[in-house]
Structures are given as C-alpha cells and as structure tokens.
Length: 433
Ligand SMILES: O=C(O)C1=C[C@@H](OP(=O)(O)O)[C@@H](O)[C@H](O)C1
Ligand SMILES: C=C(OP(=O)(O)O)C(=O)O
Image 1 (cartoon, rainbow, N blue to C red):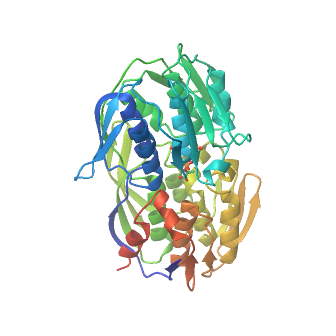
Image 2 (image 1 turned 90 degrees about the horizontal axis):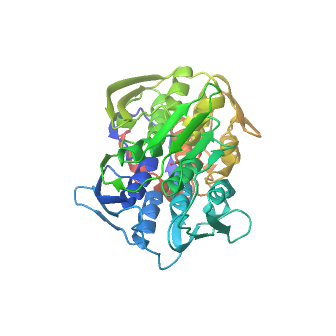
C-alpha cells in the first residue's frame, strides 16, 4: 500500500519514460524488418516487456545495451519461428491485438494468453476483421476473449473494413495482417485514432495512405509488402504518463514543473486541449518534429480550473487520460461532462466504474453514465483508501488526487503502475523535495 499526503508545491524538471504505444511498435516492426533496429528511450514497463518476451519466443534476438538502447535483430517479414509454448501477453491489450494481426499470417500455429484482466477483454473486434481476411482465430474460452489459438494462413486477402470503434489496436492488427495480404487492405474508422502504426510502418518501408474524410472518418490503406527495413527509433516521452505530472502541477498550489521531450502527436494530445479549455497554464517549449512524431517540453504551472465538456472525435486522442482528467474535473469549479467514451469499459478495468468508485470514496460528486461520467467539481476532497483493481492508470491518477486532497490517501496494489511506469512514485516524490 502506498501512502500519499497533501503535498507542498512541486518544482523541478523531469523526463518521462518512453511512449508505451511507440515502444511496442518498435519491437514488433523491428522484429519483422531486415537488419538491426536500434530503439532509444524504450519504455521498460511490464507491457512492453511482454511484447519483447513474445518476439524472443519466436526466435528474435532482442538485447538491451548498457546505454539503455534496445537492439532488435530483425529477420524479415517471414522470419519468425514457431514459439515452443503459449505466448504470454501479460496485461497488455496492445501486445495481444497487434501481434494477432502478425500471427494470422505466419506458417505456424500459436497460442496466446494473458492475466485475468487481459483474458476478459474483447477480442471479437479483431477476430471478426482478421477472419474476413482469411485468418483462423479461435477464442479458446468461447467468449471472444483470450486465450486465443491462431492458425497462421499463408495467404490472406485484402479487405475494406468499417470499424465500429475508433481503436488503434483494431486498426493496427488489420494493417499488420495487410502487410501479408494479396491485395491492398483498407480500414475505415469513425474518427482518427492514434496513428503511430501508420507513421512508423511507413518509416520501415511499408506503403500506407491515410485520408481524413469530410464526415470526420479516417481511412487507412496498406499495400502488400515484401520487406521492411531496420530503423533507428527515438521514442518520445509518453504523454499518457506525463498526464499525471501535468495533473499534479496543475492541482498543487505553488507548483511549477518542466516536463521534457513529451510526444505531442495530435492523435494523442487531447489532454492538452482539454486542460487548456479548463484554464490550465501550460507553455510549449522547444518543439521538434522527429520522424513524424512531434515533441515539446511542457512548462506546467498551478492553475485554477473550470469544468468542461469532452465528447466526439477528441475522445480517442485522450482515452487513457480520462481517469486523470476526471480527477482534475473533481477539483475544478463547475461541471464536467464526458461523453462518447464507452471504450473506457473495456480497458484494464471498467474505468467508468473504477473512477466513480474511487472519486466517491474521496467525497466527489460524480455520476457514471453509459458512455462517460458527469462530475460536479469544486467540493473539497478527502484522502481515502483507493482500490485500483490492478489498473495502473487508476493508481496513478488517484496518487495525484491524494496530493491535492486533505488528509492521507492509501493506494492499494501500487505495484500495478509498473505496467506503464516503473519508478512513478519515486519521480513524484522527487518533485516535492
Ligand atoms: O494502440 C495502442 O498502442 C493503444 C491504443 C488504445 O487502445 P484502443 O485501440 O483499444 O482504443 C489505448 O487505450 C492503449 O493504451 C494503447
Ligand atoms: C488501455 C491500456 O493499455 P492496453 O490496451 O495496451 O492494455 C492503457 O495503457 O491504458
């Protein structure tokens, strides 16, 4: 159990660990490329280590250098070998869904399974489109969840798929299977989800096009591919992890924190727009454009916040930050309404429920809805015992709430932060010394 007390002002400069989504993809695409891919600022979180473990089990040599870089000895798009046992995807939805696209086209059968949370998340969303491409995937539990058995098929065919959800994991699974298809593959999503796969696969040599339609939908097409080529990948700081430090600096009076080298890709940076609309004082400095993944240093100062409305196409660009945004909303003056975010129900926990349960424990006025929540902010919050239900984002968001609440907060199962942010509590306490 982690004890959090009302905080003195936070001051200092920090560098956030590497982006989780980009780290996963650097290992996967590196494994499928010819040659040695070098990954700088890789996230050594449990989820990304699951991805490394899976590719090692399929014969890929992946080593960490003394300078922290990860070297992936890629064997080409047909170079994976049959794993000797079940692939362990741990707690990681990204690993599961993206790797399924790749495994659908291999010359071997594979089995994959994760922890209890992972094995209860919906996989029908990838099983359906991948099966349309000719893949053979079976949910061994019979309920469209993992464990999965994937019987690789030598020849997949291209499809045009209209996804009911804006999900980068669904999109990426289809695009990765599309590398191996005999004709182009197109996915249409209701609005643009994070586009790291499109940017990085293009860098590795794949031919991909994305069009934003007038309707607000996004259409991505990949051409079949013979070869990918090893790259040097510079992983920016993860904006989803930076979110907790942005939140802490905004909420604790007198704070001023500089967060260096944060990825601010438009398809991920919704939280910055929302904070601005709530009255946050955040200055962008030192903006750079690294291979399509822009970064900036963010100077964040304590601010008085007001409620806002968050809905529509911005939702996929901040989906993982909603627990932190809900905490900000509870401290803000006025009402915050979050809509169109039913995807929260199928993350590591049902985050509508876990946010509601824990904000209520602290005394906040929150009403859960079918696709979001309504928060009447501005009531003083009191420290409480927080139950993250092993969800890293809940543990971190409520650690920040504890800094701004009166009295002590106790975060149970605090080790779950290692999924995306080993060292989180040490970095947080370092800013109040
Ligand atoms: O593609 C990715 O790296 C991710 C996509 C998102 O999930 P969905 O695609 O299911 O929305 C996000 O919640 C997850 O943390 C990482
Ligand atoms: C939902 C998340 O990750 P994943 O889907 O990869 O488990 C997350 O990190 O908040």
